[in-house]
Length: 365
Ligand code: KG4
Ligand code: ZN
Image (cartoon, rainbow, N blue to C red):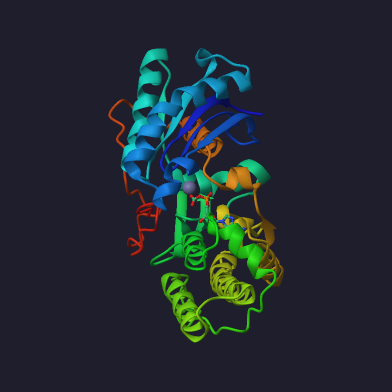
């Protein structure tokens, strides 16, 4: 079985406060002993988006109780932990700082090592935690704050093939829902309406499909929905239920087409490396969308590549992924000291230029 360690992980980079305990093995599978997530949706709902200052204060208030619950559920004491892993970026700086300061305090108090983890590495390594994918695998992170293709070669070797240059797809779903008067989060409400709609009634753009790279753009699509909505309102002073469903279906079809076309390009690049066990994983809240998921699955069939979508609770922000990524670092002999700093930006692949977009939840890479 090899070396193993029990890791306490902390996550507070956006609007979820989370703590988890994971038993990590250097080469083999890991065991999630507990995973606790306290969301902040209700705190931010009146403002229509995440308010960084409110998020940071809520993290400071909630971290202690999340840690206590995680230890209780794992049936261990703090002193049983071998190391403390914490998201040290990228993300909203107040929240990241809250987690890093808490982890430093715990580390100093119990004399156990501290490991700073890149939040995106946590997401990118999740398919290995949940499905034991072997390196290298291709990953699409697609949520309200992220959208990028990564080839994952090891716990510290990631190549970014491309990503969104403006909004993340989840953000576009949320904005579309707002434009059409549908409830938040927009993804599930747009998906539900789209099921009754005609995707061909409105011609909506598929941005950047003419470019031979893996970059994407979603903000123009939202503007096209706005124009189509305004056109209908001007014509007949309002939207019918069918208009709404057709707009949702058209929007969802456009996002699906863009993600599928760019996944084909990314898979072609990845398959050129002749991976031993070709695998593609999709993670993030948007991976919950059935139309998108099944389209990506069929693209993988075209490329004779295994398709994996980890359970949603581990696709969205959580601390088990941070404990796991931190555990792999720790077992490889990597840890930090009390000079560990919180970083608002922290690209996983430093060889690539920064993407232009920052997304609703702040700059990610
Ligand atoms: O990963 P996540 O929980 O949080 C971050 O953004 O980090 O993703 C949330 C996003 C929201 O924008 C939400 O509208 C979107 O994922 N989402 C969906 C669906 N369920 C959630 N988008 C499309 N279809 C869905 N069924
Ligand atoms: Zn995330």
